[in-house]
Amino acid sequence: MNCKKVLRLLSIYQDRELDPALERQVESHLRDCQPCRSEWEGLQELVGNLKCLQPPASDPYFPTKVMAGLPANRAAKFRLLPAIAYALVFLTIFLSVFFLQLSRNNTVGAEKPQAATFTAVLFENQDLGLLAVHDNTLALFER
Amino acid sequence: MTDDEIVSAVLAGHRQDFEILVQRYSGKIIHFITSMTQDRDEAQSIAQEVFLKIFQNLPYYRKENNFSAFIFKIAKNMTLNWLNREKRTVLFSRLLAWEFNKAPFRQEPPLVSHHEQSERDSDIMRNLRLLPEEQRLALILKVYLEFSYKQIREITGWSIPKIETLISRAKSRLKKNIHLQERSREIVYTARKK
Image (cartoon, rainbow over all chains, first blue to last red; front, side, top):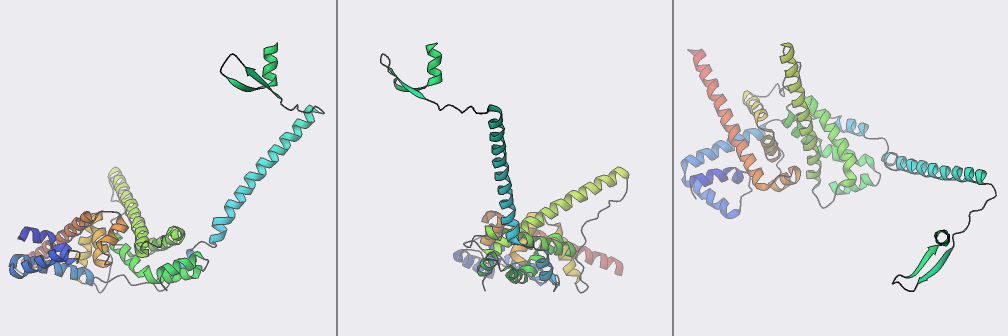
């Protein structure tokens, strides 16, 4: 393995993410090559310094603050509101149908809607077979 | 109690168990956000929002995934959103400053100030902030939080070769910049002595 390849793999080797076979090759190269070893030592020093950086001091009240900021009741938020919305939609539809029907009954009076009747017509000369035709449509032809 | 057990308990209605997760991960999350933003006060408030978001997203967590990756994905997204907002604010204030020929209203985010922090630590922090965002994110996840490349892939959605390249470039850039700074400091020091 040449220096160029080793230098390219050095960071991955440092992160312990290299394939074991390649890792052995890098190690063996570092033992023999002074410039690459010096590069490796520089990298080790840098990561050592980075790891030594002090993490920010933790606030002992942080968990309490987080818990106080959580929504009051998950159940209320996620289940009650959609239920109310569905109930309102249903009620609106029901009431509008009810009042529509009521107003129709008032205007038409005693007239009852006629049941639709169908007559079977057989078209013998054509290949249409048997058709069910609404009586109103048939009345149009008769005229 | 494992993370998955706590999640199940919280989803079953024992919301007080969520505090165990907060205690377990708050240090790492705050450390991560502080390293990314370099602003300790903002890091605390972003971390609070992150935990709120985690709580709201618990029903969408799948047990076959890594819980740590799940929460750091949320933390990463919220931190990057904050950084983008911050960039826009700085740009806007600079435009205003240019318009009115004044100093910008909002300066760069302040550096973390540790009384006990050495000069070298300050150098590292300053140079870390100068790294491109993706390189900084990859390096912090690997070096500070010690995630494996696979976990970083889960958190960021990047491919492994991209992660390798980002971390490698971040290290060389950081090393080069710190070296240059040390050299220039030596030169100034020698010049003053003369």
